[in-house]
Length: 170
Image (tube, rainbow, N blue to C red; front, side, top):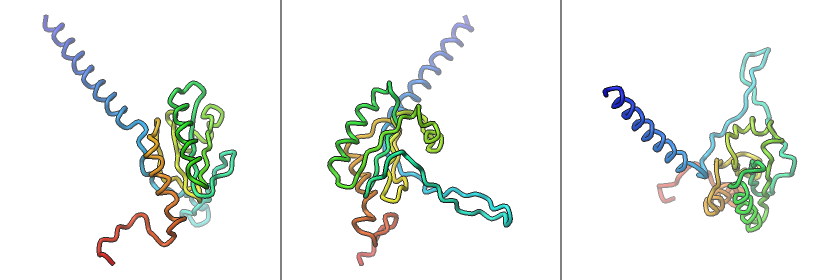
């Protein structure tokens, strides 16, 4: 009898943990997040110091003038279809914004370079090709529009620093 009770306790704990994990993953799906500004470094052989290495990525299509929406998709991904529609609508609404869809199965080099773990994954790039926001899962249209606003802000107001907040009223 005690063994049966132990099995039921283990089963209950497993079910609760699985439910909580599933809930957490669902809440994160499609949320646009800030990305860390990383510069790829390579150690110089002669000096041993870190040397900045230019890392330009070829998506196979030109980037947008003001911003680019990059979507990683697969053929049988149902949310990818809805994401394609949303990103296409947003790109059509904002001049200078381009939507590029990448087949994750045929571009494994890009999948590895951007750590794409699931589809759809959406990257929002500014006019220089820097990643401003990233989402795994289907993002909401309003979130994409807001992220584009953040990506094109330097083009509209070049003297504004996006990271600082002015609280002194001057």
